[in-house]
Image (cartoon, rainbow, N blue to C red):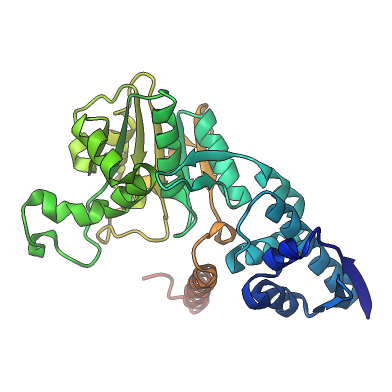
Length: 337
């Protein structure tokens, strides 16, 4: 049994690190099998030497993040623990600076994970960036924030956001209203991100001036988009032809960000994802970057990360069962039929 000592700068800082009702400390105790308690104003970590050392490193990085004004939520605590457990905690130093935009409500937008930080840097340094990964990793939100920042700095003249209107279990024809009313639900996540960045009035003003355009992917055909920051969202639902069409739209002084989750394709059976195809074809081309998010980058409720991991495990088991069945057929001399 070992004891490690953790010192905070103030009672207020300790309260931030420990979380509401010591929720963050409870998570650390459960994860590493240690006990954390306050002894005469000093935080003591008691447990197995290796596990206590991991808990101490977690608290030390949370202290550093708190000094930077980071909100130490349960999700953030889980993220720091994951990085420490995997020996990647030094990468957390990359989060020390980098507010990319201030929203209309005054909230700073910044990278919450190392993966998000790399994504932001790739968008800043490349003409075309693919952001691929599971739900809740901030792919679209950060791309919209970068677009809003570019517009504010006059690095582009307009923002164009688009996504394919692919039916995910529902039929467009059964939705009420005209065409715009039918496609608006598909574009709602893009509206929400823009509203948060600019406010409803700012968004409406920019739309009226033609500075912002939110439209289905089909509306991009035949256009050349100069001086634009273009975001294609839900790109896993594009066909190969649609993706090629989109990638040949942007013109001089334009930047394109393509986001999607290849594991959640809503295309009809037999149709391959244009996103998966594009990533395969364009890998290695200069000025085109591909960033892959992982479950560690999920910044929604911490259960989302566990849900993603559970589905990935199920998919691997399914593939393994399929491989075993095929091997049995070949052994029996039946082959694949």
